[in-house]
Length: 358
Image (cartoon, rainbow, N blue to C red):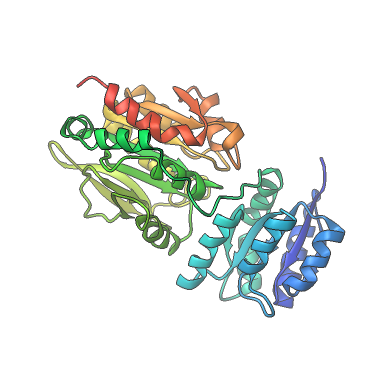
């Protein structure tokens, strides 16, 4: 097994030492260097050429986001953000994802040593995953829509299409690399959409900020889900960080949302399998299941249950995934009908909704 070389960048000497000790204890990981600020990190990136860099956001001399932007432009490196995730910190971390960061881990705010030790397995797993991930650098501006695509979207805003999507539901599971993938799917959809439910593996605070950010560029409503929500067209609901999300049927012909804090599944909460199993139970053949880039196996069994109930399921292909983990497991399990590049998934959702017989 090849050794994973890691560079730790954090202005806290305590954090650098703790992370270094934690990662160095693994036989397949070598901490090749540490840096207290981006200027020292820049020199070590060039000389040490690490496989993975862990990066704090709030640092002296230059903040982590500004440094990451320069790194991705001149010396692209697989990067994991390890930082405090207050509201402001979460906004900055989302910016890091846009710049090409692979993952984000919330830095403990109390009992640093004890908390990091409890997170040992999670941190090690994410470093290992990041070492094999593809670096994706998102374009900062979306290409303009062609006249033919604008005309096509206008047709999709018709009463006929609204009627076709009225009783359908789309459920999406995504994890590592999923923010960029999710953005690509949602921005390719027309104004009129079926209800869309999303489980993106993210810490608390993140999902609200992500929804607010996406809302500024989408023609339909997107927000965090609540247990009072009723499913309706033109609405995207994100499972809040640290809460599982399920579909329930409060009365005949009406579907709603229930949030819970049951134990994590596959070490994550929210977990997509909670959502997808409930969609299989309540929505069945009127559902579309989608699994996007991500580490682990969450979503595969839920998609298998959805397929057995008559749904149509799509997986992102390996070539466009940052991490081909979740899609691969779902494909291997036989839960997928179509495997597509990320750019084609939005169109496939709409085509399926239009072609489905009432």
